[in-house]
Length: 427
Image (cartoon, rainbow, N blue to C red; front, side):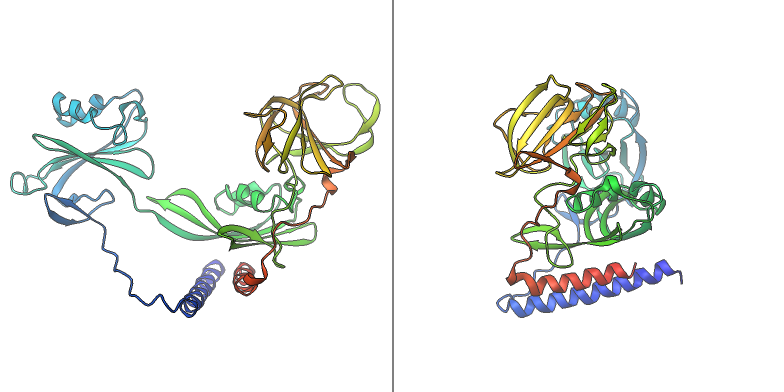
């Protein structure tokens, strides 16, 4: 048996034990919940008061039909799809009159799949299924079923069965987190998920070769195609000789992430105002200016990024200035976060929607876009951080965690923490 399979078996065993413990805990603490749960009926659909077991992903008894399948080609209309199948113009017209929530001809997309069900010779005229049925897939998950009868058209929307899988990934950084996750044959969007979970504690622009990560997550699939990451169930990153844990826990009805000590990973300020970029120039009291060709202080951090990259405010606050700096800063936004801290974002190509003086913004809101206005040799963001009116190095600002685990949640959190950390250590 391969090591990866052994690891997965251990993880599944832990999951079973943990689920049993949670169930026993819930029963113990909710003695009033003694009524038996209603059994869940199997997925079925009804035609002319006859209950028919589902035979395929669309709820149709496929063994009673001949099925033709195709994909929408560029610029095809409903008529283009249905006339070759033998439908009359009158039937196609009635279908086109269905509500837009069922089928909207203007939203038919090239490469989308469609199927046509015609009754098998053995059931024609002898079965309630002896109707023509057209199925159109609106996207990977959603579809519409159109039942075409001699005197009427009726239809319903449906969704394909979704399979949720527990996945895990681990690796060592060689070039970037994104490339490492791709090399591990995992969903590369994990890089985005991890950068958001640890945004307040790890500067992802400073990720180094040799850093490591482990993550357990749920991913949803339809027809063996990923719909995307459902949720992160636990994460660990080794960076700058330090371990960082991401342990999910629901507190005050909100699911968020905490470290091994019960401190929230969410802090007063994001570590950086851009999701993915690189630092092109650091904080300095004497830097050679690339345009002016002189040395002068640079009390900020430059992030090189493509023009138009969204710039996010690193914390909640009120916009105090929006405009153009004639001394070289170009388009800029200044935000006052509280009585102590404020931040400024310069060289913007443009401003975010609704950004103007006096507007309150929340952490993560888009306030502008990377540009090269003012004195700049190329697109980048000049990010400045002020404490009590004096410029400080943004990379050295430490902010206290927000809302640690409450005392009345300590026992529950310790159980989740122990399980999650044991789970991750198995990877």
